[in-house]
Image (tube, rainbow, N blue to C red; front, side):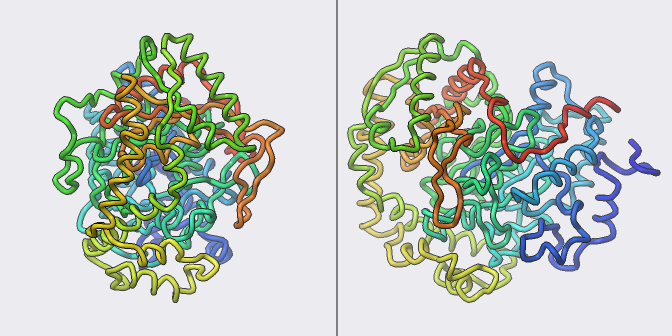
Length: 568
């Protein structure tokens, strides 16, 4: 392949190669997307540091992605895989990022080794070696998943800029072994939304700035993996739906994927799963990253007979004979004036499920009201884990730039650093955690047992067992907390968007939480280790609804990968 006036060593653009060869900063060796504060001083790098990205997007708690869908849909099923030369990256990937990142800012940095990685994978392909369906697929991972390379792993905090680990996280290692190109990292809500109280600051980190959703001005990007989700919504060829609720998100059962060297919140609730353009794309990615790991004891609980054939589960007939429960009391308890269109679309989707051969049972979660009233329980459990788990992660660093080893030290450093936005960006969650007990105390175990009741006999798992259900279904906005303590899997697919009558709701940080045109999703919640089953159910519904493409973002790249791929 030739770009400009001379050949280059891989499929990446010649200007980027010049940047990587000649413009590497002395310390640290990475390339950052400039924040508002630094943007004027980095104009000479604009257009280059925002390079080579958007494929599958990965994040701790969730893994986000989209671009692989074009490849998988076109080639994987037939056994033929796309050459890395097939798309003009200079006029697709870089162009797409330049078209949206100054406004939405989902990308935090890129991998300066990506050229060499792509070259090696091209060489393998040219010799007839293809590792699998994600060989050569460009991937972004959330800035909480450690890589032992020139990139950072910061959780959005300057406290960890320059920190080093002894090896790749298990997830990153498995991605590399499967042939993926880890191109960079996405902006998280700082510390996975576990520093600043949860009523504000979604999508903000000191290191990466404020990420916005693509469907309304200053849209709240939602959740801890904001950058991954927003990047996914602007990469795929059909990129009309946004955020974790509105791409095909697979939240795996806790223990199905290793969390080794992923910056933690709670060992009992943290999990990793793909956010992709299609359900089948999630299946391909999951088959590359699930499995046991000696460095994460929770993975040893995977039953030997667990179905891991996620791709094989993607059948149009998966809904025929399925028993699906609707916990109507949860919907009634959580509905308000912002969810009217959401509930109406959910009820209409139930008719599609019935027409596909599924049986819909109206059920209740017996402890739903008590769970929703027990507002501090989840925070207490996560805080107790976080105090212990974050210390464990910090101790594993081979280079710790500020010698921070405990949560009190981390809080003190954050409060005194002018880069961290304190006090306007508070440390309220950490303050609570340090006044709370940790996960070795009797108080913790009492709280955790209560949580297991809410999610078990009084909630999701008990309802599945009592009624012999294959899954429970809910609007995505109502689903996540009811699976968390149980460590149960969730798959969410696009459903619809808020209508013109939707009131605009703005949070204290000025982020728009609801407004006309913002999409929402439909979720399948399953028993532990039933990931393949609910992936199949979600696939069958997705194929019947095909919502993607019906909702138009106000910020969207003009350049499409499919417009130029195959022209060489």
